[in-house]
Length: 143
Image (tube, rainbow, N blue to C red; front, side, top):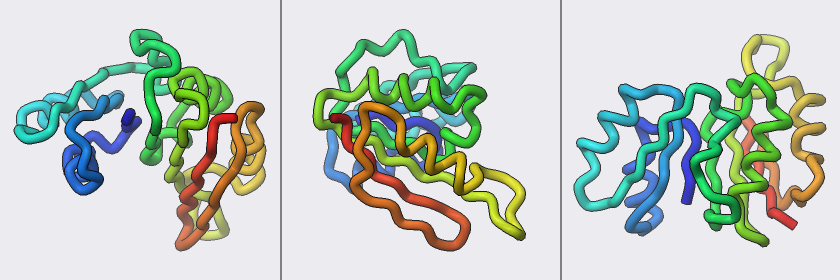
């Protein structure tokens, strides 16, 4: 599993899912450093990146699941983020995206139209989308 963003909760998530190891990519080096010192029962491989949509040091078709915690909205090139996630996933792998959706009262995040376009990225099939309270949880399958 690869977790992009959310380094502060990655160890707990991996433990709750019953996994023994995961890679965690983030642009916050301090969170990654804290993560590697706090997780003793789970093997966490931290991956520091300045540009969240380019994880070139990770080999292609490596992961069954990529989880993106509020990182798609932070990517400078959102389409490149989706392409990179597709590159890293094995055939049939899942991309799980949690993101803020802009609304009348919320100024940050993706617009609904922008999110719809990104979810329609070639090579992915939208399996589930739950939108609640200004956040969207989307599950995509690599075709």
